[in-house]
Every structure is written in C-alpha cells, then in structure tokens.
Amino acid sequence: MNLAESKKGAFLLILAAAVGGIGFVWLKELLDSGFTSLQCLWGRYAVANVVMGICYIIKRREISKEAFKKGVILGIILFVFFYVMIEGLRLTTPSVNAFLTNTQSVMVPIMAFLLFRKKPSKKVCVAATMTVLGAWMLSFNGEADFSLGAIISLLSAAIFSLQMVLLGGFVKGCDPMDLTAAEGFTVFVLSYIVMFFKDGYPKITGGDVVPLVGLGFFCTFLYFVLLSMGQKNTSETTAGIIITSESVFAAIFSFLLYGERMSILAFFGCAIIFAAILLTECDFKNLKLLTRVKK
Image 1 (cartoon, rainbow, N blue to C red):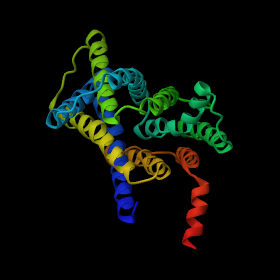
Image 2: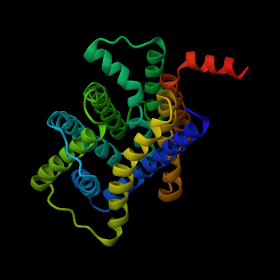
Image 3: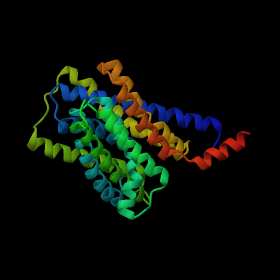
Image 4: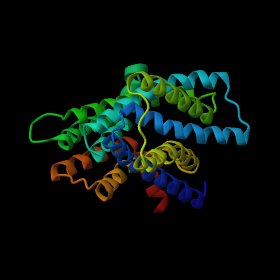
C-alpha cells in the first residue's frame, strides 16, 4: 500500500464520519416534526433500498441464499438497534446520543468474551471503565444518576456490538455487499410491518424531505459505501480511529444547526469516552514499529 492510497482511504473515512455525524441532527429534526422512531427507520431504509436496488439492477447482481439468510439475522438485530437508538435520541440531545452509541467499539470485545469466551485485554478493561465514567459525566443533570436517554443510548451500543460480533463471523464466505443488501432489506420490511400496525404512515411535509432523503441516501447508503472503500486502503486500526470522529462531527453539526450547548462537565465526559474508544482501537506495537522506521 503506497502513501497516496493510504491518504485516499483516510480521506474517504473522514467523509464517512462527517456524513454519519450529521445523521443524528436529521433524526432529531424528524422526531421533532412528529415522526415516530419506526417512521424514521422505515423512511431512511426506504430511500436506501431504492438506491441499493438501482445499483443491483445496473450491475445485474444476485444475492446468494447463504448471504440472504445471514443478512436476515443481522437485519433483525440491526432493526432492534436502530429502534432503541432513535428512542434514545428522542430523550436526549444529538451529540450525547452520538457519543454514547459510538461506544460499541469498547463493547465489542466485551460482547465477544460473553459469547465466545475471548478474554479482553487489560487496555479494554480500562477503556470500559473510562466509558462508564465518561457517560456519567456526559449525562449528569444535577443529580447523581443517568438520564433515561443516555441509558437507552448505551443499550443501543450493546445491541450494535452484538451485530458487529456476528457480522465478523458471517462475512467469512459471504460477499459483504450481499450481506449489507439483505440486512437493509430486512430492516426495511420489519420497520414497515411494525410501523403499519403501531404508528401508521408518517405525514411527510416539505420540511421533512431534506432530513428524510439525507438520512436514507447519505447516512445509510453512502455512509457504508464510503466506509467500505476507505477500509480497502487503510489498516483496521487507522479506520477505527478515524471513524470514531463521527461523534465529534455530530457535536459540531449539533452546534451549527441545532444550537446545542454543552456544559464543561459534559465536554470532559465526551473527551473521556473519545479517549476510551481510541485506547481500544490503538495498536501500540505497530505504533512503536512505525516510530522506529521513521527514525
């Protein structure tokens, strides 16, 4: 891998993080306009599936049976994740929700241990403790407890961690694009069925078009395309570090578009969570090797 390819991969991952960051603001706008969690989920995946379908038609691709079955399992878990995550967003602010849902990079090793007895390293244990402390500082509202929105957001991170652990096993022998397509179709179908019986169709106004299309095209379809392309030219460690900046972009967009303000305590809470995520993603052995090569 040459330097130009590495820079290109890093740039694409930064774009993915920026695109994902603004999604929390668009979700908040839809919720504030009267959309339910299910209607938001159905809307974004309706747009994403149309785009994905067009791509498959143009390329004349077909999904294998194995990929479809595994994609359905992943889709069910992803559906639960999105529903819980959006509920958390409804009860908290975009940047708080973004930071807490990004703690899945800390929870994935813990989930792997619970499911497959893969013992986490010492740095993961330290990072998990830092995350709990940071989450408390971030959600502190004058009382020594978590807000409901923060707790729900953390729960969504745990659910997504389960999805990531299973995906790591399913992707072996299956085309990642096929898994993604089957997964997305499953989320769309489930959200439609539950939405139909529980909430009904959303009343879409002119002001809802931009956040709805933005979520579907940019934050669902384009996000995963950029992520896949970026990781082709960068290491997993580098990709993990860069993509965690999604929560930083969420805070920036929340300030610019939503007018959100954060307390000093919440700011330090964000910093601790971000440091914990970086700690779990950093490969200190490779970092030392890179330093020696430069010398």
